[in-house]
Length: 55
Image (cartoon, rainbow, N blue to C red; front, side, top):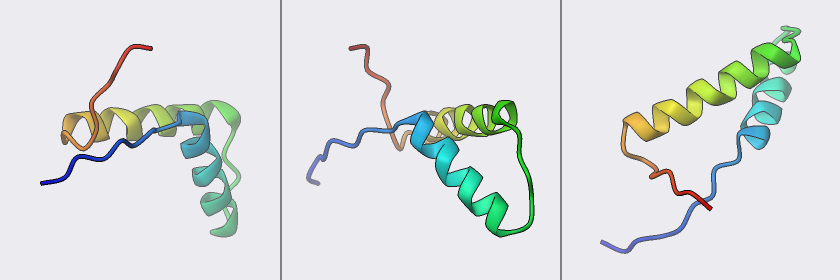
């Protein structure tokens, strides 16, 4: 299987969630978006979709 490098940016995740939630009629706060982005990142780690690397 070929390995690819994927960069996961929690700010980008938060922006994605914001746009999707607003489009669906929700008004999330910045704190809620940060939490959703962190939870999503942790989920991807848990499912071994990504590996966390220190820069």
